Image (cartoon, rainbow, N blue to C red; front, side, top):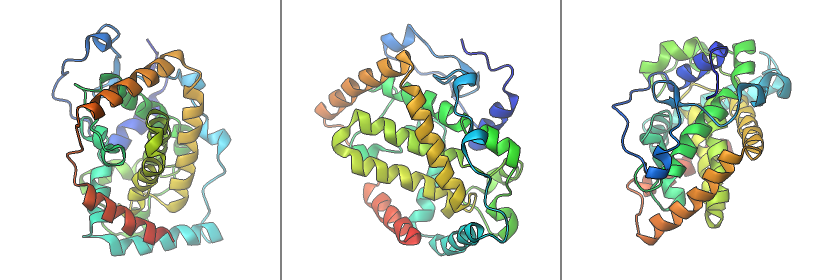
Length: 284
């Protein structure tokens, strides 16, 4: 079992990222998954594939966040102010949904892009794959977050956020880089390997997942860009792990079986498409 007893900073990051993980109990898994159950290091958060020492070091890999008065910060501020127009639109609704990293909710993030459902019952390896890589990707951002402790946009602009119940926790957690963006990009890259025919739709959804954090008023634009980088770096390292590669192959077979059954998304995919279009207009 991975030892997380010495990674309190990383664990604090992930608790702040999810803010409140509520778990009702452990549902039954496919027998193959049961025989190799993955432990939790916090309620609802599974131990990732990567050992703490093999996680990407965001402090070493990323430049410092843009300082106040710089051209880059002016761009951050402009994106932030433009995002206010997306409140009370489908983009705001999507941002609120994307903020929730708890499962089973988060398992449906890419269901419209995949045109298939990801569930604990029908795709147990893929479900576990998403949960474990969420941990790896989020923790990859912790070194820079803890070092820079960048102030989040809502603290400066005094505007609302899409998850007001998380405000106090987010104020104490560094903004740079975005853990949500690391997770979204990691998931997107992994899912493109599982379902190559949906690559463009999956990558678009991964970008939207990250842009939701700007719409939500909890991250700057530069936070999202560097978060994506950390997600990609995490996936590169995951490929060296044999258990990850085995779960990836099993997930491909599971998704094919779900599609053969004709199980389509239960989410409102038309509303999601509209929300992503609004986000893309913001980013142009």
